[in-house]
Amino acid sequence: MKTSSAVALALLVAFCVTSIRAQRGGTRRLDRNKNPSEEVRQSYERRQVDGLKITIYQPGSNGLRPVHPGQSFTNGDRIKVRFESNFDGYIYVVNLTPGGETRLLFPWPSSRRNHVRAGQAYDIPNAGEFRFNNEPGLEVLQIVMSRSQVYFLEEILDRAPLKARNILLDKEVVKKLMNLAGKPRRLKGSGIATQTESKRTEGLQTRILTLESRKEGSIVVLAGAKGPARFGPGEVSIFEIRLNHY
Image (cartoon, rainbow, N blue to C red; front, side, top):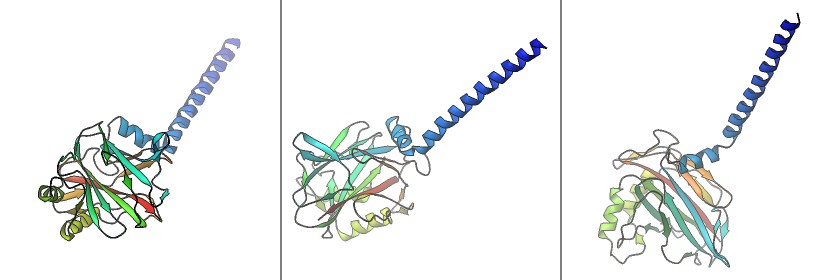
């Protein structure tokens, strides 16, 4: 009788310990599920999924400080955009101005450094900062990322003067870019807008992005929201950084 009681007690203790461990394990899994942004960042840092990290800086008394793109900017404010890819590929940065112009800011014809290397930081502009002028409205930076070149943007670079620092895009190229980008997510003001649908046009296929953003600091976008973790041939992703200027 005493032996049976001891065995029963031991089994009860073992059951309780196992239950507690299971609950703790479940809690940890639940915590991870509650923090998807951290999973996005870890996937980027471990290079499990093709992605891009972007930081917007403003000059201050102690040098450059990161700011959130959701803030508003005023006339005379200056910013610098820094991006870093976790894969070898191609990046294009297009500026849609409040006045309706569309310009290619990156790369420059003289350097053609849109073939970016994994882990290397790139600044736009590479020297100095952008300055908001007296043209208020929504300043949009459209980012195109891929492992392959976007041929109609490369053709523009081929024709542009070598000393050009921003290239005005003609209506035909703007139309191709709009068809490729589709309709981005609606935003009331500043912030990051990703694509809402996959598009196939001009021999290219767009991929929906996964977004992770913090109040201040870097923004991470991943190409693996739908489909494989890596860009395939002819696949691109496009997103917008919308900067409100008043």
